[in-house]
Image (cartoon, rainbow, N blue to C red; front, side, top):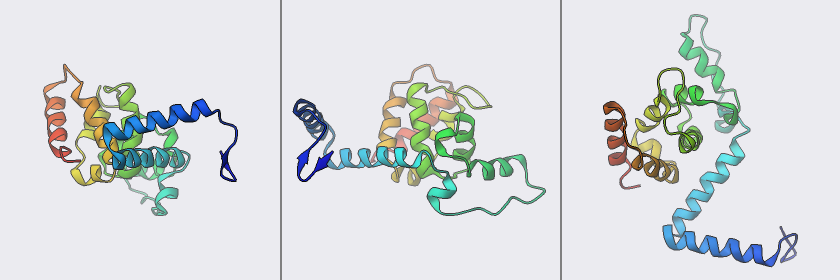
Length: 176
């Protein structure tokens, strides 16, 4: 905490370690990458307790009475806080290109823990949904794209379909 130019509640050693770690990160990744990644992490933390409707400031009208289950579910999920969305919720919304800027970081966080996490369809269905988003989606969250690239690069024994999607993803985000 900074008060009147001085640091309160921190030990000098902790500050030195944090500064050294930050300097290592900047040396490894570059200043713009570290700032962008930190910004994505702060955004994820701040937005986690809010819904897509709250973050985007757009309230979808109620779905029509004859709406499909998919449409009704997507409408309902947009009103839930992002932090409570599970693998299936994320898979469904991401597959429909809903709220990608806000949902891709949360999905990649789940994939970091278990790349083959599954929603309701099959093992790896969230990974498939995430991998098949276009370059324009990843351009908005390049740090998240690089994180997923690292995850995907370490995967072995993928089904032929997922391997093809992984390879396509790697080609799409190569310049990010």
